[in-house]
Amino acid sequence: MIDMQVEHILSLLYTKTLRAKGLAEQNIFGSPDLSYQLLPAYCHELKHVNHGTVIAIKTDVDKKNKYLFIAFSASLVRFQTAIRPAICIDATHLMGRFSGVMFIAACQDANNQVFALAYGWGDVKCEDSWTWFLKELKKAIRCLTNCIIISDRSPAIKVAMAKEYPEIPYGLCAFHMNMNLKIRFKSHVVCKLFHEASRAHRQTEFLAKMSELSRVNM
Image 1 (spheres, rainbow, N blue to C red):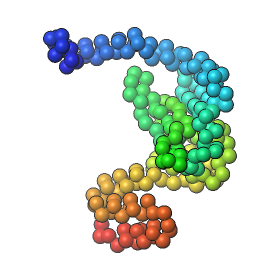
Image 2: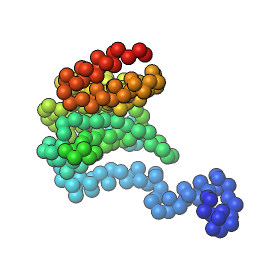
Image 3: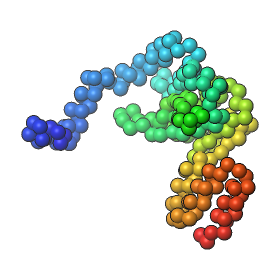
Image 4: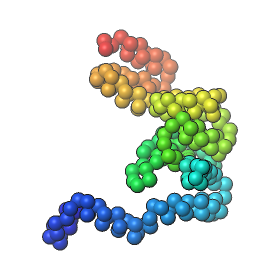
């Protein structure tokens, strides 16, 4: 909008500029409606050219896409052979006409690089959508020997984990917990001690930091 005003000396309303941007994106990428209609065909071709890729789609009573799960074959093989056995799961709201929620399961490799294991789409973040996503993840990665799953303090994830992974250790994300401590106590000392405890590599060091944290006057 500013570029048009400067380069072409045009005075445009924000709403008109937004409509023009939407039309330009539709001409380049196609309409969102058509993209959703092509989703089953896209998933079919994806499985055809990536043997071993796991894809699941669930529709509602009106035959509209409700849930989607994708795990590429290369990601699944890599997880079984060279990735740290700790899976972080989270979700974020999508912006746009159709909104929805994107689910993600990610890990870290030996170089501390983020490794995308699986992702999916749903209509909302709730107990049912998380349960469906974790069920499909369980089918894709099969055995989870000596593994842990980590998330934020979402009640929906906690319930879904109890249903689908009752035998797997379940932990809370230290980053989210530290953010909650910062909001609740507004103390740099508390956050610093908790961060040091969460990064401890030995049990004695962890207990020492937690003991020090318990003595802080909050």
